[in-house]
Amino acid sequence: MTALLLNVAHAIDHLMLLVFATAIGAIATEFGVGRWEDLMPYTTGAFVMFGLGSLPSGRLGDLWGRRAMMVVFFFGIGVSALLVAATRSPMQLAVALTVLGAFASIYHPVGIPMLVRHARRPGLTIGVNGLAGNLGIAVAAVSTGLLVQFAGWRAAFAVPGLVAIACGVIFLRVAPREPEAPARSAAAPGALTAAGRNRLFAVMTLTAITGSLLFNFTTNGNAELLKSRLPALPDEPALLGALLACVYALASLAQLVVGRLIDRVPIKPLMMGILAMQPPLFVAAAFSDGWLFYTTMILFMLLVFGAIPFTDALIVRFVDDRMRSRVSGVRLAVSFGVSSAAVWALGPVVKAAGFTTLLLAMAAIAACSVAIASFLPGEPVLQRRPA
Image (cartoon, rainbow, N blue to C red):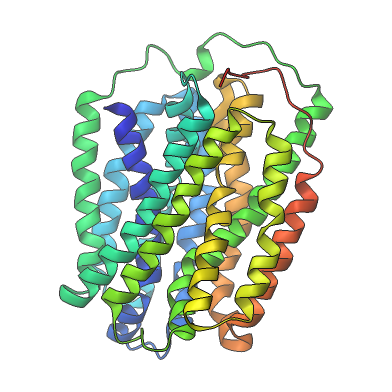
């Protein structure tokens, strides 16, 4: 039951951060903002805190306890979603979204290490967890579309907020208490030299930055991008949400496949192969329209989501459990902090240069990911598990 709730928490985490992107048109109309692009920068604080908040979240997860931090996550993200629903101006919205981002920062450095701590097949566990997180994105698309159309954008935040609080109550009852904080447990033998650890951390951080840039550009921009390539959609928010949900649901399945492969084959060639397929698909998407574009979107999202499990798998395989939350926190703070610029820049870039330029820029970012991944160290001995 605890594992199920940790996977649900991942879904809630991503759902909450994507409600705004799907409902932005309705919010801009109510607040009297001229265009959705002008409102997009107001969510930057949420993504900055999603990154920077990972530092204290990871530290507290190792030194105080991961169970306690997950309780804070469930109740904090639920209450902050209700605050977003109660806002009455763009500035209030920006503040409430920033608070929501701070609580959302808890999950990745705390929930995933808690989930994989005793996993026999960590790759598959990470893949299932990634599937859950990205199904949260799919649910955000379809539920937000329906709620915006039939109950208003405020309900799109309030309903999942109440669900998060309910999950927190259940988690508090069923999650077993930790005998001691992870940082106080016995150390595992390591296999990497100091230089190898530094190299690993640099590769993990840089590929996480490029991956987060692509993730934020796509998941925050796909709704408006799809509207621009399928002109019949702007007046059909429920249909738009359903089409996006289909993209994210299909793309999420890639994480299960990648998770199983991580337990069976060396990470480096697998990671480089998936990353190498991203640039040509972004270029193809830049020059396509209509249903051809929709098909291409499904393919590039398969690869964007398929690349997500690698960083967590590397941490499980290379890093002692006593400090996984802190390592994750530092990596997330850097990568998400930098990539939050994608959210701020999305509206102005599209307004000034259009989606074709954005897609070509994403192709260049993806090419950088391949080059960075080529410096990944060889397979470690630490934490290797049988398939």
